[in-house]
Image (cartoon, rainbow, N blue to C red; front, top):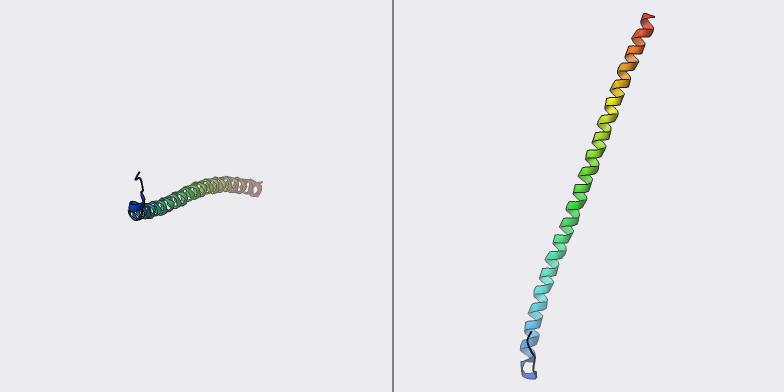
Length: 81
């Protein structure tokens, strides 16, 4: 770290200002990266929820097909009876 004396104060301030501006740029990029990570995490969560809902729908559809075939079988028995 620079030791600022009265005659070097302007130079120290310029260097400090440049360092602050670089830090601001770095912080801005970090915030954007963090935001992107959050969006990706949300997207992954949505994909998992969608996959689970799709599995549930497929299972419900399978149960409906089984029940429909049982109903058809019962109807055939009734008509034969």
